Image (cartoon, rainbow, N blue to C red; front, side):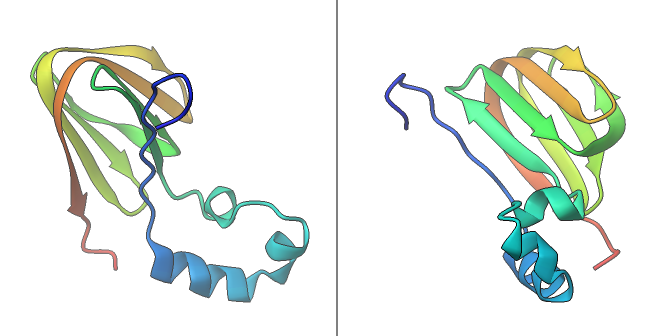
Length: 110
């Protein structure tokens, strides 16, 4: 939790990131976060009413109770009440409403 009372949660796959970093030493020298290099999803949450997903690949499902976003490493499912997609572009989706759960569904790609 930061000084503004916001809680930030980030999800990533550490094993794949470490392997990719070894294959790309320039990312370490430039101090560029490996997550940006890999186009893996980054999830941030503020309180329980706003959630941001970077590096998504599209919306699979959108209702007031559930939003499912496709990513390079699986599906992120957000469940709650009065859910809305407040901002959506080719890289970022910001979901708002009463967020009750976030579930990561692993894809079969490995």
